[in-house]
Image 1: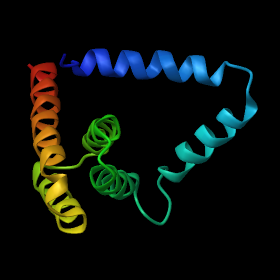
Image 2 (image 1 turned 180 degrees about the vertical axis):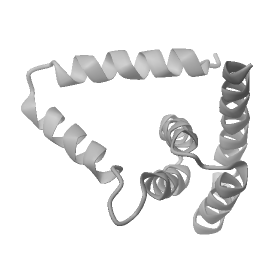
Image 3 (image 1 turned 30 degrees about the horizontal axis):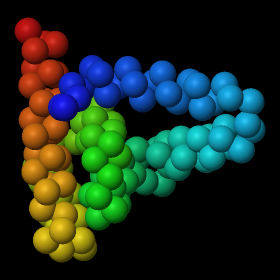
Length: 120
């Protein structure tokens, strides 16, 4: 079953809320550390998100790939920047990344289409 962007975002938000409200403080500590890592510093947030995307593709996590594509685009990444990022992941990870490259291309197009429709 394919998940839509809207379903993915809703599920992620709901489950993150459950995790963070579970009462287990270590979850909150990790989420805070993760969030802080992607905030603009010497490296802009967009570059950090693209770096996260490479790691996600090499580690073959489609949820992470979708999240980092969505965030990269939100931070202003262009298709060309994403293509180069996908290529780095392919070079680093090898042919095992190809199925995730397909997924990434599909989701990138879906997000850009959504943004275009929002403008209309």
